Image 1 (cartoon, one colour):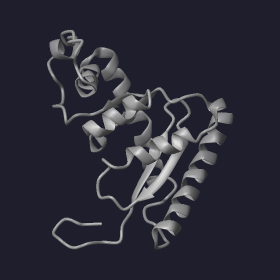
Image 2 (image 1 turned 90 degrees about the horizontal axis):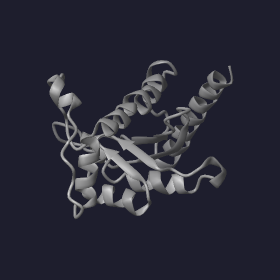
Image 3 (image 1 turned 90 degrees about the vertical axis):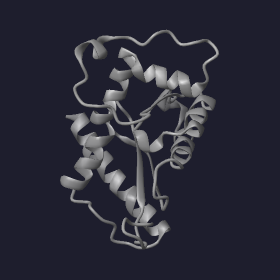
Length: 180
């Protein structure tokens, strides 16, 4: 993968789809794409392969790295409501801005405009805020508590297996907490 300052480094982009209720990793994969814009399709494909008994995915929450019109349209085509950040917001906006609902959206608005509008609503902000307590803790605990900070193997196939093992270890740890 390209690194800042020029050159390349053998590195991987680890992805995990996390259930917002249980915090279990339900989809995981590795890529060598330096950004996340192309990583939504593999996650949706993995989610589509889950047993029907687990239920259907209806909502997707993702950070700005996944934001693109193609990804929003991809979610819409899969009948999934996307909440993908469109950019960085300033901290501590005035109270009236936080409590104010956006004006109604035109009926002809496209999927991108609808998603941007959805993120500005009180309900949309609350749903998007769950990302901070869903996927972020999973990666933080995998790194800080479980001590997984780098891959020991080389090659995409081997690293994929290693990442799957890390996600299985996380899920076992999480299942133990959920069972208590």
